[in-house]
Length: 261
Image 1 (cartoon, one colour):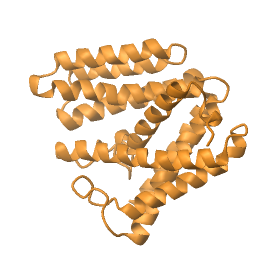
Image 2 (cartoon, one colour; image 1 turned 90 degrees about the vertical axis):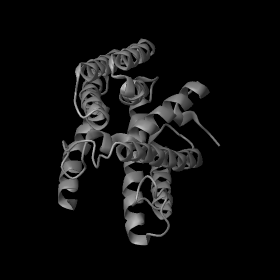
Image 3 (cartoon, helix red, strand yellow; image 1 turned 90 degrees about the horizontal axis):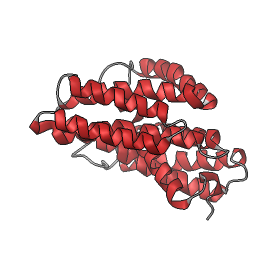
């Protein structure tokens, strides 16, 4: 399992970084494919099949990703409209879940593409977001295995520990501080503290997906990534972090690298 996880990371990591470096339609196309897979996985978890409503949601989210390169605002409206259609066309017991799944896959993906294209330092911001999420995952796994201790949320995840959370925060803070010289003079303290906070957000995103899987009795979203499960299993933290950073950017009216403490 560890070997499969390592090989998958060696393939997918560079792909994500290259797409992030190029940006524009290249990155949006990768995000669109990932979003379609996430839509399929969500339907697989909550409905057990990929019906017409799920296919429509996948296509809507993919189109929103491509549209968000130049028109992020309309792209958000497209996702919301797709969520409404998905909810209306779903069986009664799945209406809320169908709409939520469309929003869950689509809005963070649009946010991530918008951050990449936002002002002059989108590439640096996107690299920072990716590295913070990866550092959180690695730190949480390493510290959790080495230290163990009390569980973070035993009712949702039987493996995540408080030690893992603190380890993920420490690794993320280190990444944030290390990225400061590449962020056009961004504040070392500001980026370190902000990165540690985002580690908490990433873990919350991970726990949310774990709760959904537990709710529907599913171990993994799918098996498309050897050693990792599905795309949702791999990017649950990224979905939460991209949303948080996009909202903070909108609220502050400035790029992340301009944040100071």
